[in-house]
Length: 145
Image (cartoon, rainbow, N blue to C red):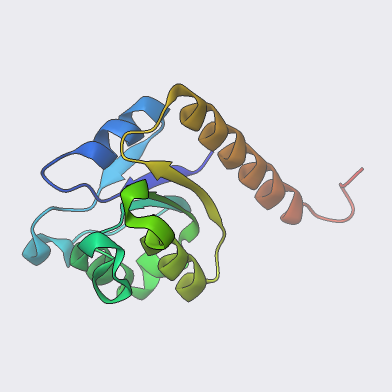
């Protein structure tokens, strides 16, 4: 299964959601100056909050931008999960749309704030489906059934 890499502000809402998934996870550093030395080495799903009231220009946290500016980190992201607040209306969880489009990886799910038990179930299901797809696409034709 994929690892989770995520960013969570001091509110730790995204962290609490990720913790509920019970999967291997790594947190992108809170301080921008510490992000440069933060690297992942396995295919991962990025979980990120939406900032700035959903305004496109400020929606993706600067720490996530800096993390994705590293070509290796960027190449290892296989999917995105966005958190946000439905009070943002049409820009609810828009950071996920932005990153998904930029990296050309699927936006797997949108979660409101901390998520519900159903959100946890749905995310785990979607992660498993993505994992299965990735595993099947890497099988040698000689061994496929």
